[in-house]
Length: 61
Image 1: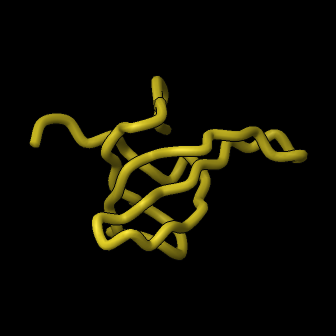
Image 2 (image 1 turned 30 degrees about the vertical axis):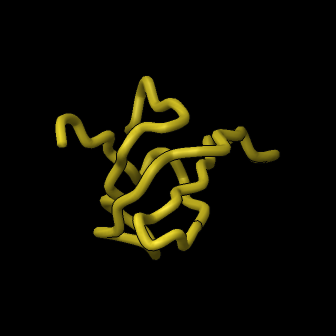
């Protein structure tokens, strides 16, 4: 799970519909069911929402 996740972090999706996509984290919310959701913006500008538990933060460049 992505603990310490914050806006602007680079991340990679490791599970779910968007598996293996990378991008920048934004719009961190808690859903009505209590799950942490985020919006990921890919380098090409395409955005998608996913669960925070499905991403890992990428360190370095």
